[in-house]
Length: 310
Figure (tube, helix red, strand yellow):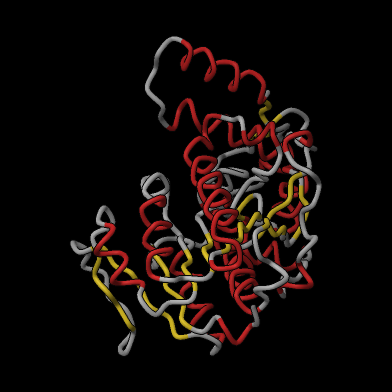
């Protein structure tokens, strides 16, 4: 398979936090004709001239028709759409699509310990389904999983990596647990890179990152910015909590029959993010191939300022 064979690319969830960035990167690259698959009930709008096809995501027939003539599918589905990706995979195969990028974009699910966490149940199901179909169809159908660990800009905006809007910070343990992080923009760059390098990225995961950080490093960068209202961050000791405690509570709730929800699922994301035995230490291995660059303190401070300005 050569790079010239991937020219027509369909994307789902192109208005989401990640999907909107990936869509713009695909278009801006000038390498592809991009088709947006839009839910039949959606009122989202796109730039003039965008190839938008309305689909019923529960219908194999509707999706197959929409994917005719496409070389690749990029799924940017959020949590609610992840389980339904099996129908999208079947439609892609039926339509003759060559490459499928599922909605992974996160933790290293090639690691057995991460793969076993309940929060990733549906992602693992889709991954196993893709692996089986690729093995069955050989070179006619391939996949690539993009692993980027934490979203840096989104993670700060959502208060997931560190609550920048808090009166004083809260950290996990000592605050010195390292984690890899990647901006949404760089994830978009990686998707473009995968599609430009189909042979080198076939039937495997690719690993990217912009930076390795700690929460204490983020606190130090906030302090360097001298932001009004953040004086307490320099003088007060951060609140501290243990990941093991919230994970244990979540596990107990699930054993007692509680329905899965943010309260008992998010703790497992922290475990995957911060526990070194839940990844293979490969973050950034594919940066050069995919055109992803490392970033430094000034770029991170710009992201922090942008979050706090909103």
